[in-house]
Length: 365
Ligand SMILES: CSC[C@@H](O)[C@@H](O)C(=O)COP(=O)(O)O
Figure: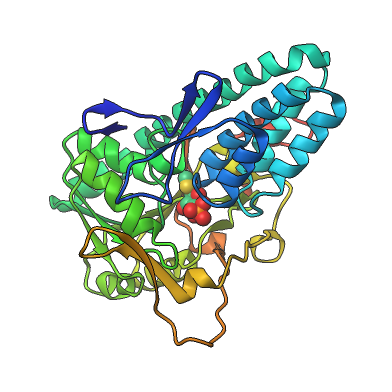
């Protein structure tokens, strides 16, 4: 993605280090951080310097490469996988990426693992870019179709940040918007602010602005009202974990948008790469682990003061307890379709298996 005339991915190699964009500093500061050890990678994921399901997975893969530079033994590999896996619980891309890395590296002699780990991590990063670009192509057809039906600019509502900052490049939910915009389809995005961490107001708005896509930041509670007044043509969000039956975990508040969309007959699409599907799960509400984050993210907000300094201030009554579940699950019955790198499927087991037939039990594919 281009920022001030330069093309960036969200993660790249810088000599012996892994470079990432510090997302805790956006949109006010564009700061690149260098990760030089396993523990720095762990900390970057845990503190959300990097975030977004696909990017978490790729950062963990590079974190494993950093770990194997220090200790390529069987014990070192197992321990690095364990600590990286424990950083965040909901996004399944983390466990998926680490399992893929371990499958590649464990059979190798320890002396060969470090070099192979860099190559495997780079391959995962490239795979993510290709998947997201393909999601963009498939999803752009939905936006173009909506424009062809109405002849008006297409109003898309999105929640959280599922753009290029959440992946290695392109994004999931925002990739179709970028592709449609680049193809000349008029599109406008309603950007949910996405409290408590404001990934919409801070990150999606930053990305859309940088790409020149018309957009408007709205309070999280505005979506239902806009849908009642025909001001949303479709909702498009990302996913942190999707069950084999099409239930979708995404940033807290996504479920409420899906309910409002259902009530108003607004199509509700979820964009995700195959790496976000947890084929072992059938009931998202009961089975997907939901991350509980610090209450201070709810009681406080961070922003730019008039004097140009970034400040964190309290917004809740001091002394009141706060709760902070970071994700919720939207049941498949509220999802119009899943936009993947292989095409768009109904949010059902058969729909997903139609796109990923190699996942059928006993399949020779
Ligand atoms: C491609 S991104 C899909 C999701 O990862 C995104 O919508 C989201 O919920 C991110 O949550 P975050 O807590 O910022 O990591």
